Amino acid sequence: MVDFTTIKWYIGGMKTKTSVTLSQDLLELIDQNAQGEKNRSAFIETAVRAYLMVIKRHKRDQEDLLLINRLAERLNSEANDVLNFQVEV
Image (cartoon, rainbow, N blue to C red; front, side, top):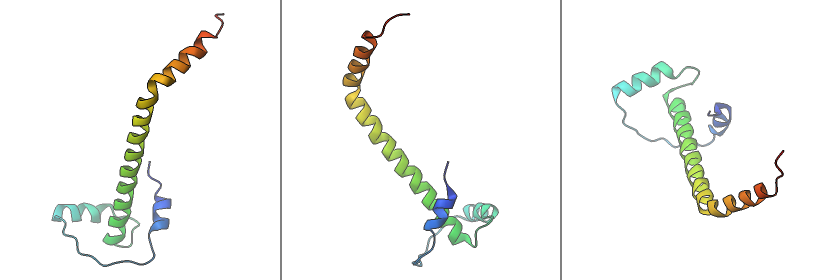
C-alpha cells in the first residue's frame, strides 16, 4: 500500500509550470476523487508519485527475482545439505 503521508512530504518546494492534455472523462474522475487536495495539480502530482513508487518497487522486485533465480541452484544445494544433517524425530 502506498504511504501518502510520505508522498505528501515530497510535495512542495519549487514547482515548474507545465501543460498536460487530459481527456474530459479523466478530469471528471480527478475532480470526483481529489478530496482533500488543494487542486487538480496537487492530486495529479500525488498520483504520479504513487505510480512512480509502484514502478520502482516492481523494478526492484524483478531485480531480486533475477538474483534469486541466478543463485537458486546454490541456495537449494545449501538447503539440502542442511536438511541432511537433521535427525528424524
